[in-house]
Amino acid sequence: MAKMDERLESMVERYNEINELMMRSDIVSNRKEMAKLGREQNELTPIVETYGEYKNAKAELEDAQSLLHEDDKEMREMAEMEVERLEPLIQEYLDKLELLLVPKDPNDSHNAILEIRGAAGGDEGNIFAGDLFRMYAKYAEAKGWKVEVIDTEESEAGGYSLISFKVNGDQAYGTLKFESGSHRVQRVPKTESQGRIHTSTATVLAMPEIDAEDFDIDMNDLEIETMRASGAGGQHVNKTDSAVRIIHKPTGIIVKCQDGRSQHENRATALATIRARVYEEHQRKIDEENEAERRTKIGTGDRAEKIRTYNYPQNRVTDHRIGYTVNQLDRIMDGRLDDLMQALQLADQQAKLAGEKK
Image 1 (cartoon, one colour):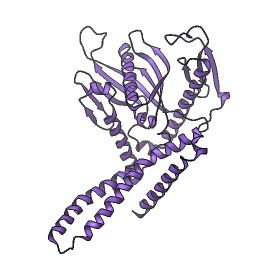
Image 2 (cartoon, helix red, strand yellow):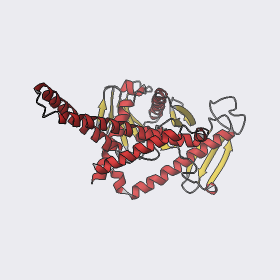
Image 3 (cartoon, rainbow, N blue to C red):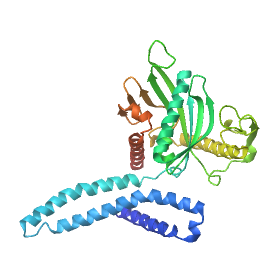
Image 4 (cartoon, rainbow, N blue to C red):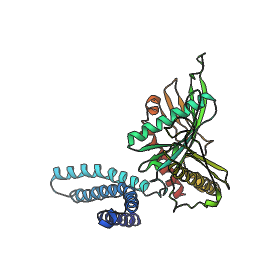
């Protein structure tokens, strides 16, 4: 416990230091430094607040224990009641701190880039991909995050064979990273006249937006093409070569961006996306080499892994990785994902903690 206290005290010192730094005029005028300090401050806040509550409860317990031997019976009884209340509360704070101190993914505070593809089920898989996009867009809106569409390949029957988009917001990747995998839907398709329930799938890939200085891509490895944008998207579409496609030759990863207002904007977005895709592939290979790391995660993050089933006839959603089931599919599809996301984050912290203790 002494080591934990020492570590927590140093975090409080750093938290106070950050608060002072963020009031300095030279820091305030430096947007990049302010953003970096803001992310660190947000990561430390729940730890510092919980540690403060723990210390207050511990001090109250010591005061109560000192009254257990008082001559006044009523005073002793009140002290006993306080001890009974405070001891389990202090243990709760310790358990919470233990989870909060589990090392976090340094990319958790970054923006997220998501790709959703219609998979098994043909048209119905594409329609479901569109439903998932709307679910995430509504969730992002409720969180105060901004969604920017990068590329779309619309399906004739509705939905998308592919839609990629960026979610800008604090802890966006840390919240959405558990969405990678295969999402299965069970329902009567709009295209089905017999009223039979079909099973279709859409796959999701969630990646952190990576700063250029954090992960370097050799520009010689990239093949950059410009072309006419296609589909709905504004007056510029089909008039100028505004769409940009980038191929990362070593991996064969291809990214296209056409939803920006200019070729310059599409190029910048496509470069950010290809960096995220190559980084994700790089990390996937590292994780495969490090099986112990894979075992401390609630999922592999592989697009082929079946992570969740959305059963429309029974209004039920089941996350297979953590055994989470809720009969509120309508609320989930409306973007009310907070309870599910919190359950996933808690399960991930517990898995990492268990891995650390082995």
